[in-house]
Image (cartoon, rainbow, N blue to C red; front, side, top):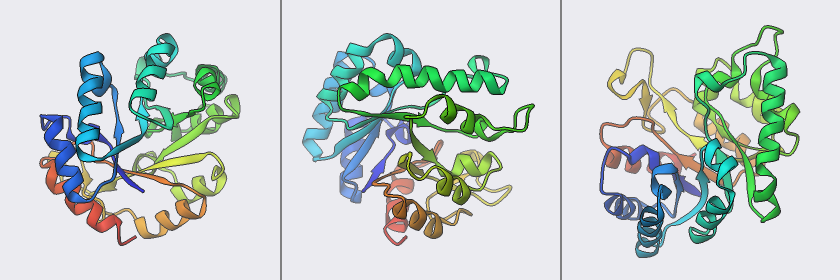
Length: 249
């Protein structure tokens, strides 16, 4: 199914209108992020938006601090919004390990963090950016080390960030196909273009070979394809053009 990462629309309030825009554009699902469940009122507003439009929220992003320190709250949110899989999306530069042992330990930490969610029946894993693919001093890369330390971690693969990290997404799909349970469908503009959108492009209108990559992901059994743009000037343009293109892959 094609989903939509609601972070893409964070600069275009109100979210209730975004839900309707997405439903009208043909989406059946969305992916949540922190601001949508920052407090009880936000959770209720998100729940209402889903109910009104018929959209579902099978996947959600939660900060490491929340996943680690507010387990009961996260479980309550996941249940209220009928999520299936939870992903930790990021850590700030100051918090990132600097060597192989540190990244392996971080993977083990994530494995432990995920234990109560897996016990409750949810999938749990990591969503990457580009820094996980930058070689460490010993030549290994953080993504491998994280999975070494967390053997049961799922992976929501953000393909465009893999490419921006200098790696080959097809090779990584082949290597970890059994872990990939969702993928972010995002596109990269040609060099020097769309600088006012941080170099991202509407899906199908950039340089990523999505037809080939989508086939590989589907062959790996991925069901959740989450369309995303980190900084669109017009979120309705992005949402509508992207799902139209993605349906052709």
